[in-house]
Length: 394
Image: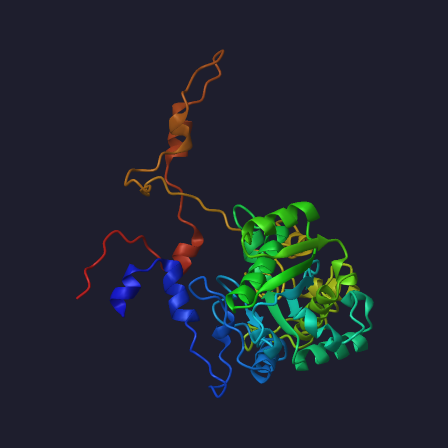
């Protein structure tokens, strides 16, 4: 009720209004996107069965679904598949789990993180041919992803970090960098599996940053959980669970890119629409797309498909460029009150006027500096005035 909302912090209020998740059974209502967002710091629940898992995946990958409010606030979606029966029925036996990512470097689109896990006793039923997804042909990778989606022995997690989330994080006053985001995404997935009641015996991770430091961080966070962490470069080419995660991450990102739906439509659609290539800065199609879409929709700069924190996007919008973004300069009026209720002081009020060898500043110059400047034109254009009193609600 209202009394409960009044006691909440703004963050809790937003999560309650936008992210409350309805419970889902095996014969539940159609897929509800908010089930993919964290709620009250709890991991999203596992899907009830493989059909529901694929329904959630299709909504996220094929329909380019972004559940509110993750485009403007908080974490992006996370899918935890149904837990295979062989794992549910043997909780004493820990699973092997691998983690890898795709799309770390592009200027356009999301970064995807994935985990794949199974019971070591089920290894004979795991599809052969796993390798670093970047080394597989598109046909082979698509075939393996299809087998993972239909498998009764492989569980997986997918965490999508959309460009809007990456931009918000990296453009903070104190930046939240890609390494930190990558580490946190990996830990989110591990917690999601643990919270679902699955014991993890060994976790293989393709390192981000210095492997030993990353491993120490993981061991500290998951102390007491009995997990053996193996953190190495090129782990996706060495360990099958990591390779399977690589396939899920890469294939998921490619599918999202291929089926991207613009949140800005129907009022705005980028030029050349989805003809942006791979999204990497070195791709000529990506370069051409960025150039043709720079600040077309003033003052927003780019659609939310673009990572505003990436160099190519920042350079295209910086002041002085051919299509620079809207420049905003804030000028305080001398007669406006500061936060303490007092008058704002002009800079020259801190200056002592002195004559040096007869060349001093004239008093009338200081008086001219103290004169109130005209209000910015936007205030007059929109008919805005300063509010000094608030009427009580009736």
